[in-house]
Amino acid sequence: MRYLKDPHTPLVQVAFMLGYTEQSTFHNAFNRWTGTTPIAFRESAHGIVQQRG
Image (tube, rainbow, N blue to C red; front, side, top):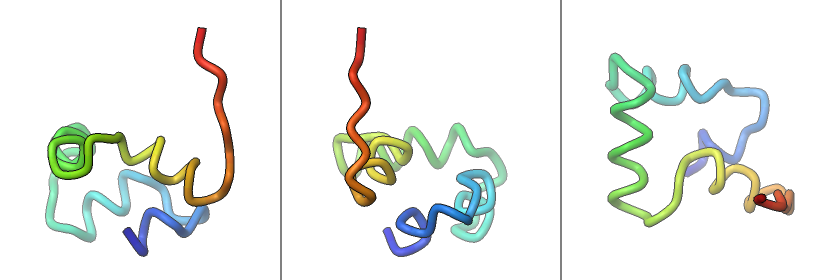
């Protein structure tokens, strides 16, 4: 969560630092654990609201 809150750390680097070789695997695991995606978590941590279609 701390890594995701840093907007200067790319998501692929967060995944790598946590031991994942693929960002997609980290994405799926994070979604299972939290019910949200890493991108959505990062946006909410920074108060960014995306309007979806």
